[in-house]
Image (cartoon, rainbow, N blue to C red; front, side, top):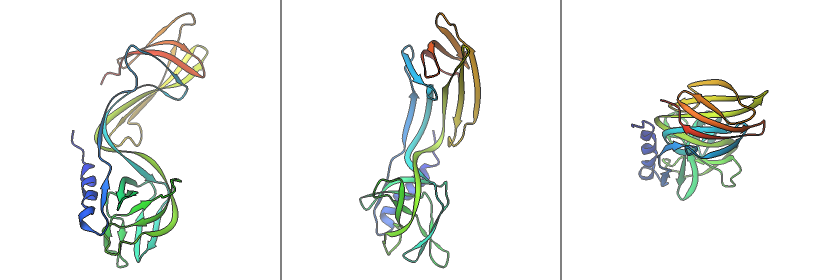
Length: 230
């Protein structure tokens, strides 16, 4: 499986030799497997995944929740809300860096990447630097909110079958299928099954076989025997 996003990680790794600050980036790691073992009884709450299967590569990162359009040390830091940031270490300090140029000189020419710091672990960036800058200055900024997330590298897939509760002996499930960057489901479907009131009920969907032992509006107890057919 080829991962185009690796190009960006390698680009950031080059920062360590191109400026005053040394930079390392969290590695991309494969994730292949399923959420539960076949043939083993499990219980999950409403809103949780009954069964999930996945095959993709990812690295830890963050998503910027506020728009960054600020100046510091005579440099213009410009990163839009929603931008992905890479989990990094800058001169020994934890940081999150942009995968591409995001710092500009007064004349508008790009200087390098932007690396943000949250030294208190509060979910807010309070300072920023550009590792490529000859100044090597860490500037205080107007606080910017962010959320930690997985950054998906290249192509992959993941699907989830979620439990949505029960109504009049009818259980409600939602199926979500993700591809590429996993930002939103590539396909989703709500499904319903009437269950037996005196025993187990077998549920089949797209090749998946699940035996439901008990279900209520708090949780569901079940055993998975096969996954969704791809």
